[in-house]
Length: 191
Length: 167
Image (cartoon, rainbow over all chains, first blue to last red; front, top):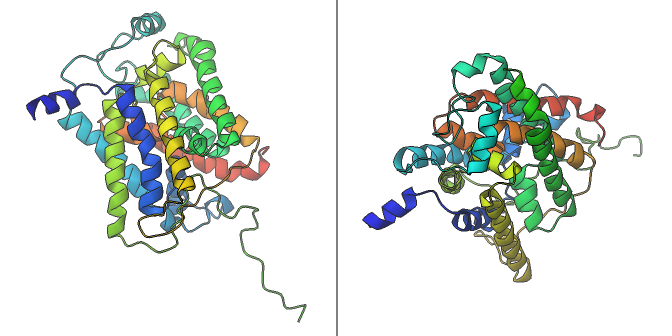
């Protein structure tokens, strides 16, 4: 038992995590005929809190409450894993990525998130505006415009062999590569 | 009788409610049965943290092609998902309450390209897709609450401008 606890506290390899995430698809389908997708929770929040007579938010969000309960679960899961199953060792990052990010000005590689960017102090600066406000806005706007995110398109959509989901997934990746390689060097020069 | 037709439904969309994660369960569910989704969500959130998918650094590794980890996670998730969907269709496996599993063919729209690119830009900068956002906040990264609120605002803005956007 002790050994098992030691084992699950280590970071999980991709061949454990990936299949578990994949199993979410049949689990949700079979326990309640639910298609896997997370970004729709953002839409339900809009529909529940600020529908503002916009037709896109006028639907029976209560029927979709399962999706909000699911993301609440993700929140608690994050809390449990971080507080009770924490990795006893230091976070391991590829040396190349570390060198690239150091060149951009990131110094702290101790946690899952760079403390240089994701701190409360950074929140009210230009850095915070770009990384939290602008970034978050693009995530919310983009996923809804695309009709799904990594879960709805890349995992659920591809599992169901949908060509539009493949197109969307490729565009997610192109957007990410563009930001990382073409835009981020300029963004980091701003501070 | 022809002059007294039934008033058209308020929502005159071609797809009344096309959401990528619809609830297709015909029977209504009680509050208690939502606990199932809470549990699946908790397990999912634990995997997110333990596989370090919520890490901004891991997303950077992925977009810099310097680690296989994220490709392995997404790739194997898709393979397992594909096999599961294939088996459900092939053997017509029913849900726990005995219903036929519903699948939704997706229609190509230009929004998948434009929206996909915008989301990709945001994904690299925030280091999170919508799922990890919730797990990051749960992990204690309180500043991410701002990212989440901003994502809600982005979703709202899409709803507001939807008719004016190319799609």
